[in-house]
Image (cartoon, rainbow, N blue to C red):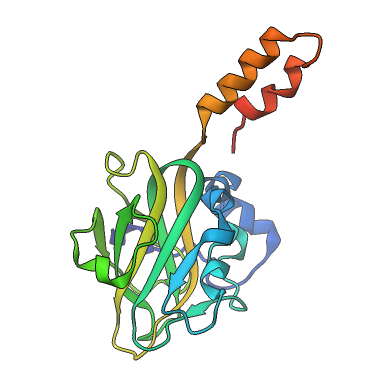
Length: 213
């Protein structure tokens, strides 16, 4: 886990010229699963301000911005219920907070338990991680892909921080692959198009089935 912690010098200086060498474009694309989250239905329990939980799922190139964050309310715990718009194979997660005791110290991941509450967090997680402080969003924690190969809902339980009363999170990055939901519906559309070639242009369906993130 800790092997990722070596800085490439992007902690200091934001020169656009060298950025591309240190952060290949593919890295940003790999962490593009935030685009596949149904943000309207995302829940964050124990957030101090309504709606802040969804702000930390943001583009890779905004991961170090400090203007959007979520902070816990009555204690250090946070619980994110993250629904996806399709099926996800989750390969890794990054969690970044402040470089102090409010940074998350442990997370527990649960798959496919919609509307999870704190009462449900007593059950065995699909995977748990002890975290290091990571204010620059450089440390990725790899998931057991076999367990997270068909995820349509992910719950992220931040169970403790490094000792502060409240937890603050700036960025949660999810790396993985995405496939379109409801493939059977797309198939039905194809049958319709085949039955009425004059009414339906087959080309109009291709973008749906060929969707690549």
